[in-house]
Image (tube, rainbow, N blue to C red; front, side, top):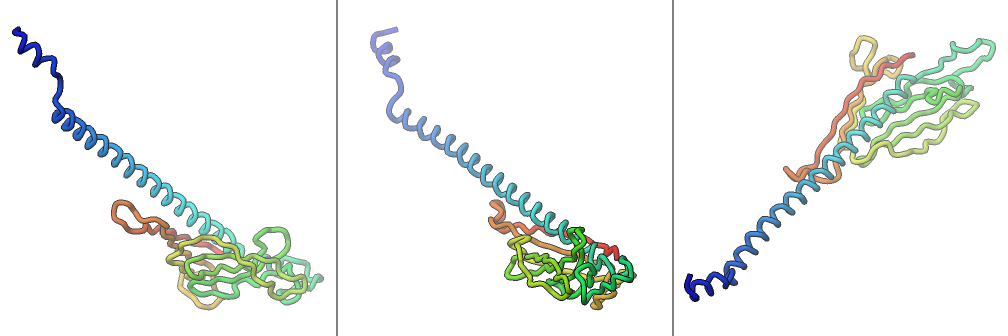
Length: 208
């Protein structure tokens, strides 16, 4: 090898070659970090979807469990000498009181402690709230005190059915309550830029 060839071999990379390599490296690393960022956003969104599903399920479970007890206990459960009635005692439940698509009010011993509660589910401005207050000792209606059951509610529908499974608007005839609850995610799906809607349905069979 001549001295000139040896000198050229020792010169190494030119500035242009280094810049090209750096540009390629930056492009590759940028792509990796972009994919990692997208994966993180997707993971966080799917976590929120799971939380919304759980929130909807919890609300449905509470409503289903309590609706089953509507009208429990009846006056006939007690010794007639007590003379306890819906009007004069907090030991006797009136059953369904208000029945419409987004508001349900009934009496039941939902805590199963011998004292009847007046239960109220109400949807307002996307918030599903619940009140369950002890009925006064002398009968009557307690003041409602609401607590949030679920937020970001896009739909709540109570459908009331009689013993034949036919829709009814008469409280005394209600034997089943079909519940439909839909909740939206707070964030949008990173794929389609739309909020995800979670819908759960259930059927509560009134035991009384």
